[in-house]
Each structure stands twice: as structure tokens, then as C-alpha cells.
Image (cartoon, rainbow, N blue to C red):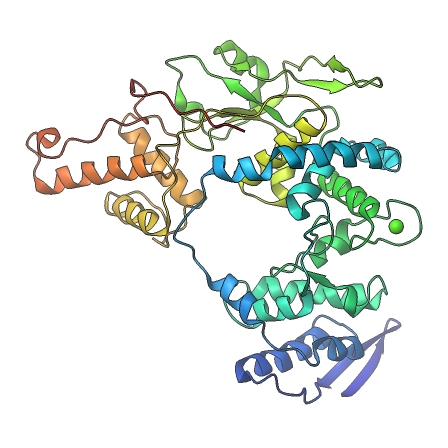
Length: 447
Ligand SMILES: [Ca+2]
């Protein structure tokens, strides 16, 4: 290495830097990225050259990480299928045991963070099966693989810069940095930048050890949720029952006070209570002013929820509703309250990649802006479907499903073939999205 430095307000800032000739990885594209990134890390990121060089030496792209980063699976797992394994009976059982085992050590963290321990335990359970599955890949190698090519290059580089800081601070050794293919580490799967920003020392030994110390990992997770906006005086939400003839236009993501929803006949399906010292339940009356929004993760025939600020905090950990609801419901189960949703439209699963591309293309052709027809049912596609449903007088749940595709396809075909009596040419199937749907009731899921 060759570094020329100048003293700037006491800090040694390199003016120029030539990275060493790393041993080739065997992948020229990777080698070129590594040399350029090392320069950028030192000159722009102001990282220590010795750490940058030692960390990036002797690594090569991980073909498994590259494959996973590029994979676009055809099949999209329905939320009910995800949830029955994420919130399995054994996971609830182990969660309760872990809760009892850890609650004393986390008393202070729980009081200070305002985050009930059961939700940190639930994240631990969903992220790593309570530490049984933390991932054993070299995180530097995973992140470098993401950084040099593919759709996560920015994330890979940003997280590597965080890795250099973790090493510079001596909070972990290079060998400690093992985790998932996406770079998440330890019991509750923190990304390096999240570790720097949000990990805390839960047991007071002076170290933030999310890798081998569950107390540190759980306290860090509580702190993460606090930083993501968790409110200690609120629940996450609840499954609800909705009266017939409900105005589904209120599936608009807007937070409204609980009194508003109750005024429309919505009732909380679960008893919201909190365990007392003796393990019994104290019913906590919900405030009329509790700000919550309506959520229908599998459309209007599936389970319906009211969710608040704390639900959004869980989504900061992972933005998928299947994930956030699993954590929320598992947390409730660990604390011995609530029920698990059983109403799901098993006959109307979400579309896979091919079906999603088709509905996106059809919506685009009908003037609804889905962005790019990429086969991914993201927020923009859901919003476009909602706008379409609204325009057709259907319940606008934005659920990108098999029946939604059938509906859009039938309508577009009818318009293409001719305006005369389109329903006779290609009658749309009876759709559960129709507010007046009188078809078979949804099948109950067994937990
Ligand atoms: Ca510690």
C-alpha cells in the first residue's frame, strides 16, 4: 500500500491511495470491483487502509450467494403457509421457555426500551429459530459478492463499510463475522450497519455480542424496535371482525382512531391483555384514540387486522406483512394471549412471477401504473390493482392473486373482442373481490 496523508483537524486523511495488488480471486470482474472499492473505502469512506486490505484479501465471490441474489422464484408462498411454519406450535413452546429463562436478565432493557420481551423473543425465533440457525457463511464474502454485481451492489458496499468500522472498533474479529447469505448476523440477524447503530450491551459486560450472547441480541432487538418508533403504551394491533357491507375503500393505509373503526362496526377479535405477575391476564382497555389502519394481507376474504405504530416498527426489521404478522402473533402467543387467524382464502393464492407479470402487463395496458412489469408484486403493483378494483366497483384490497388475474384478464379480453355484451363472450368468474360475493366460505386453516 502507498498512502500519503495530510493532517486535517487532527485526523489523518489520505490524499492518494493505491490499493495493493490483491491475489486474484479467479473472477476478473470481482477483482476489478475489489480494487476500485478499496480505493473508495479509503479515500471517500475514510477507512483505515490496513483494515480494508486485510478484510478484502483472499476472498472470492460465493456462487451460492450470487445464485440466491439473482433468483426470482416462480412460486410465491401464501401468507397462511408462511405463518403456520413461522408460528408453529413448537416455536411457541420454545419461545415460552426462552421467555422464562431470559426475563430476569432483560428486566432493565425491557423497562428502558418499552418493548415487551415477547416480541424480541419472537424475532429471535423467526430470524434464527432461537439461535439454532444463525447462518455460517463468511459475511464479508457474502457482502462482497452482493457488492460486485447484481441488484444489491449499493447495499453490499454500504454494509462492507460498516464491517470495516466494526473491525476498527474491535467489536468483532474477522472470524466472528458469520451469518446469512444476505449479510445478516447473529441471534437476531443484524446487518452490520444495524449493529453499529442499534446494538446494545444487554448484560453489562462492556461488549455488544449479538453473535454468541442471546441477552445482548435480545436487548439489541428491543433497542432496534424502540428506534423504529415502538410506543410502550400501545399494542401492535389485533385481528378484527368486519361487518357485512363494509366499505373496503378504507383499506387505504390511513391510520385512524380506534373509535372511528368501532363506529363502523369493526370489533377486535382477540382479547388484548397483558400478563400479570402471577401469570394471569390483566385486560388493558384500548384507547379510543389508538391510531390504527386496516390490513387485509390476503384480500378481503382472508383474516383482517387493525395495526398500529408498533406493527410498523416490526416492519422496519423486515417489510413483509407475512413476517411482521408472524412476529406479532408469535409474540402474543409467547405471552399467552390472543388467537391465531384461521380464515384464509386457500382457493385464491397469490400469483407467482409469471402470473404477476401478466397482471402487470394487463394493468399497464388498461392505463394503471404498475411501473415495470417485473413479476414482483410490490407496493406499486398493489396500488395499481387497488385503483383498478376501485374503478370497477370492486373491493379494492390490492391482493395480487389468482382470482384478481382472472378478473382483469376476462375484462381486458371482453374489451378486446368487442363491446357488445362482453359478459356473454367471456363471463368473468364469480369473484371473491366482489363485495356481494356469495360463494363458498374460506376454508379454515388448522394450526
Ligand atoms: Ca454484553
